[in-house]
Image (cartoon, rainbow, N blue to C red; front, top):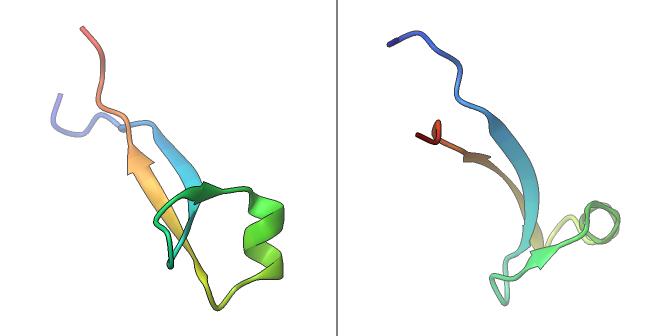
Length: 44
């Protein structure tokens, strides 16, 4: 299935420490956080 959609999760990460942060914290600190989409491959 080459065209199958891979489930994705949107998460937020601190640019300074690399730790995951909440969406609320990321909105309050846009200059020090990054939003990333993590792909979850199909489990067998």
